[in-house]
Amino acid sequence: PEAITVQELANRMAEKGADLVKALFKMGMAVTVNQTIDQDTAELLVTEFGHNIRRVSDADVEQDLDTTEDREEDLQPRAPVVAVMGHVDHGKTSLLDALRGSGVAGGEAGGITQHIGAYQVTMKDKSKITFLDTPGHEAFTEMRARGADVTDIVILVVAADDGLMPQTIEAINHCKAANVPMIVAINKVDKEDANPQRVRERLLEHEVIVEEMSGDVQDVEVSALKKTGLDDLIDKIQLQAELLELKANPDRAAEGAVIEAKLDKGRGPVATILINRGTLNVGDVFVVGAESGKVRAMLDDKGRQVKKAGPSMPVEVLGLSGAPMAGDRLQVVDNETKAREIAEYRKGVIHQKRTAQAPASLESMFSAMK
Ligand code: GDP
Ligand code: MG
Image 1 (cartoon, helix red, strand yellow):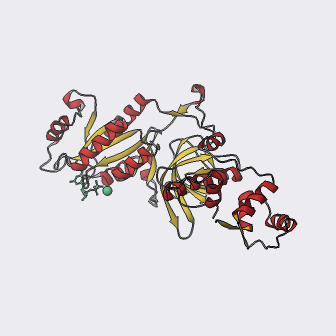
Image 2 (cartoon, rainbow, N blue to C red):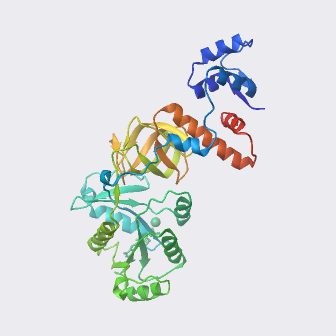
Image 3 (tube, rainbow, N blue to C red):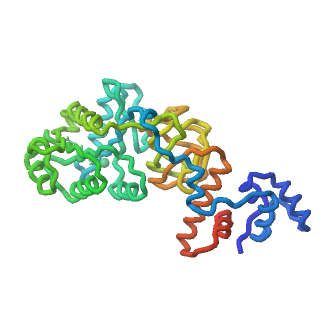
């Protein structure tokens, strides 16, 4: 038997605790807001207040989420989202740092760059590229499995001295499975024992045929250390992005994906969200996985407060009920009651899955209220 305090139930119903106490009194029960009531009583109260327990299936949830396709004429170009993958120590982080420095933002004083797992670089021609700080390959697969396919292009970093290694091959397989175009960055070409040609040949064995070998996978020799080949790499990213014709509708309720989330001591639950479409504003109400919230504040990748975030922009969002999981989708909804209901429904589903029960939907709804 599930129990819930009167106040908690009131919160869920968006009613005043005192009104519930009054109703209970009329029903012959003298309780305070802090006392618990059983499930039958809670159900009675819910009915009494005319609340239907609507969220009984995924279909109900979908109804309240605006999942409509955007019309072609509402679409506008958006920045490509680029993930860097490759074997450990082949220079992923170094390359990202170097690329970051090659943007106009790199020249900014202070260098108080906050680490939010994703950042956007404004190039010299004013175009933007969003980089995802290497999620482990596991995270990449997980996010893909959960439908949050956010990466448009993968830069496969291969050290020219080391050549193809297990994680290189893993990354190639991920890209193929996800059908994400790859650009091969042959790194560390400054090293004496660098052998870029050997890398290209070994790639053939994995059916990655680079341009130098008359294939259609772009490749570029770089040195993250000496900062050579970077402009070339950026050109290739932009060329690839053009081919993909990346677009999104910025004028709609925002949708995004959780890149990472954590419970911050001072700030509470915080999530880095990559906006896929629409624009997220401070004050927007949303549901994200099995959590809900209202955007209290947003920070960009440099830790600056922003009021809105459009497609392909990564932002840190404050104001969540709890920490969601990487790969969870964020969707803006009309009001907080709806957001809470959807989150609670999803929690119920998660709860059901975990306990492997098949309870009636109403029961699961109440168990989710605990
Ligand atoms: P990650 O594990 O793939 O992120 O690799 P890191 O960026 O941490 O680099 C691993 C090591 O390789 C570090 O010691 C870097 O300084 C070094 N490194 C990265 N890029 C280059 C390069 O272009 N040339 C040389 N010589 N060393 C590099
Ligand atoms: Mg690294």
